[in-house]
Length: 353
Image 1 (cartoon, one colour):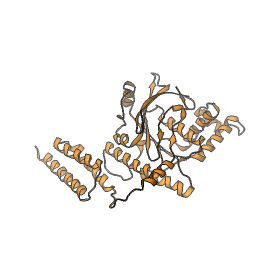
Image 2 (image 1 turned 90 degrees about the vertical axis):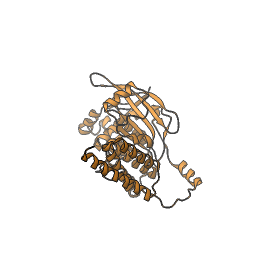
Image 3 (image 1 turned 30 degrees about the vertical axis):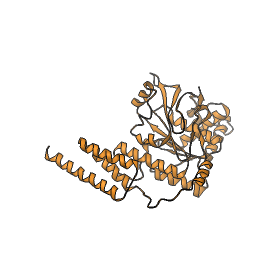
Image 4 (image 1 turned 120 degrees about the horizontal axis):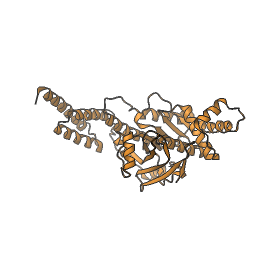
């Protein structure tokens, strides 16, 4: 063994012992820490120093932000049960046929490849919430708020009247249409409804802590209690504290942090998760892929209440089929199922079967 490898081994051994000592001295106890410490030992024995270095960085980050209560208070289970029952559940749109609900404090994941229609499903939920006069917060990283408003408006119009207005046509009607134009009136009214019940949470850094602060700000400063959050999409979010972590560890940490913030807020969330085109293709070939393939985000599968995978066939000319499969691969409170759905391609609204 050459001198350079011996020095690396010595350095990592010291770092490994240091983090183990800190965890022991602070008496930090949870299943995540126990499994991570076991993983350190395995990687050290295997001589996988690159992964070992990443895991040590992750553990330092985890321990730095770990909050341990010094005292344990008795929980009033009677009050807790009543409070929980008074929290609002959100149903998935009826046309989806999904039996499970979105429980307050938990997230539902919708994953799929580029162009599979993930964001359109979130917009479908937003439109349903508007019709039920429920406030929804949206953290969108890829889409301009004005564009989002038009997409929600065309979805609302289709759900309310059955009239499908193309997105590009809607832009032209708003821009150039006469104020008495029937479709322009419909669009203006629908955008007004979206403006009242949809809250685009525009922030420089999309972190779990900033999302938490924005939700509380809406409640305290504007008197708006959100019924649901939508995040589009997870892989472009950032952890609240910048640390040098591998992509997988960063996403794992962010999953745990987001899960904790949702529990504190006591509202459900739909989180869009991007998968690679290769993973999307695998979904077409393997209908029982389970929770695997969440694109460097295995932590998401642990904290999520529901996980859906959307698969849509892509034709040789680049177009996608209007029929797609929505596979529920995790349901914390019930059975999983596959749903064969059809999408009205102009508005994007989901039609059952």
